[in-house]
Length: 144
Ligand SMILES: CC(C)(COP(=O)(O)OP(=O)(O)OC[C@H]1O[C@@H](n2cnc3c(N)ncnc32)[C@H](O)[C@@H]1OP(=O)(O)O)[C@@H](O)C(=O)NCCC(=O)NCCS
Image 1 (cartoon, rainbow, N blue to C red):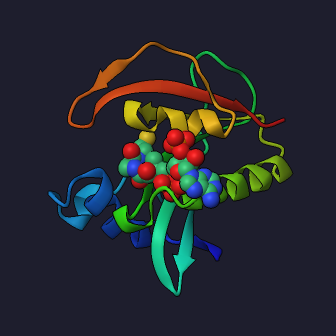
Image 2 (cartoon, rainbow, N blue to C red):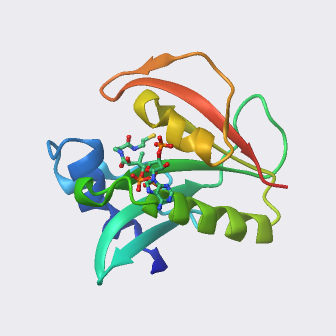
């Protein structure tokens, strides 16, 4: 089941999957998490939060229109490869289309690029390094 969740609900999964469990939960917050237009989605398996994604209302420099940035996309290791991340993002895409959002973009980690391509995202940059979290590409998905 997919639900809207609070920013603080995402923090343990962010830490475990995106920060190798090395940070404290406060360090896993992103600037903008609490902005009124931001939202967070969670996929629950038997009431356990197993997959998260955060959406900040923020455009990418090269594109005009109403935009959201996808951040903190993560599925607990034991639940990866089962189509859960795909379901969560498809839910978000339908929701964002209903909000008249033109596009979604993200800084996608290189090992996750194939996952984003499978959802229809297109790469718009070469690989670049984000200190601490490794090689990334910007990916773009036209919504409306
Ligand atoms: C990237 C990540 C969020 C994907 O989440 P996920 O729940 O594993 O995603 P899915 O299961 O929907 O898709 C993963 C793969 O499983 C496959 N898959 C298996 N069963 C599936 C099903 N029933 N339906 C759809 N896809 C399925 C997909 O084809 C996909 O393959 P691909 O990556 O080669 O395209 C997750 O692997 C993760 O948390 N990775 C570590 C953190 C990370 O890199 N996050 C992204 C930061 S940018």
